Length: 323
Image (tube, rainbow, N blue to C red; front, top):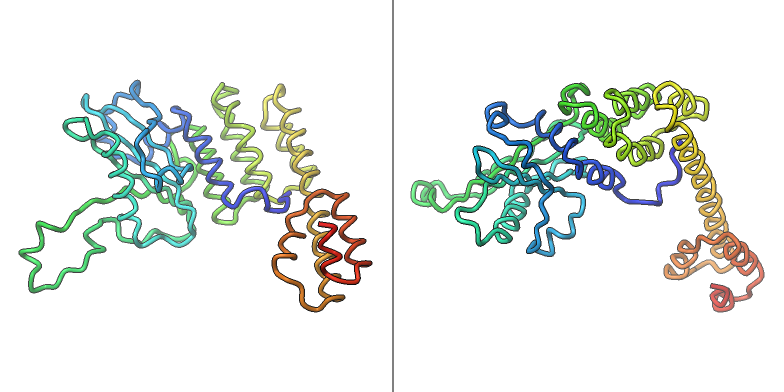
């Protein structure tokens, strides 16, 4: 379907945060990526989304990141889980993760001792993650003073969850988490085919129409439609064969709404391009600010008036009066 991509620069961020805020999905993700020895110490009944009131402004801006608090061996542990939306691994990720950990520790300044913070970077792909995973790998020390300087080199790291190259069964320990991670994986790898979309929806409902599946369904379905090019018969077949009957009408209405919005956005963009082209033909040099103002108009009636003004106005100043 793939409507014009104007809604969000990073739609996967919104999907990731929406889904990972559910404790059940978080647990299924953590169970797949943490060492078994650590998992044996975890009290899952204590898992909660952590609200950090004293976070730095730089951390508040990363709204897609999620922080969990849990107890392991009776002690609090924080997980800072962030989705890396760059296709190329960031070399300085270890430094970024240290900044996030510092934000948590500042907010927990009254706690003695400070809690363990484990940053987890989710990398959907493509390709392997080759960036340094320890902070000390980023710090250059002259060989002559290395023995003396060793004690001043901080060493923090992060856990990497590389989705590329893993089958769906390994992305999470349960169906809800697998469906979410598989959607992120397929989008990044350019493999959002009809078969893959159907498999993801089937996985979402593998354990029945649970409350969590219902909460995830709309967000996930919109994401799948926006990042695939499914035809109407394929959409209907997926809905009728994989979605519980009581949810089918909602799935179909969502698909129809997105299709209509995509057509409307296509018409708007086409009209904007026609106005801009007409202005350039008639006036040769058109200020960038004026072109941006035209591109910001979305109302179809207003675009129609601007098209007529572009054809009839003798000067750009006269055309500007129609904006």
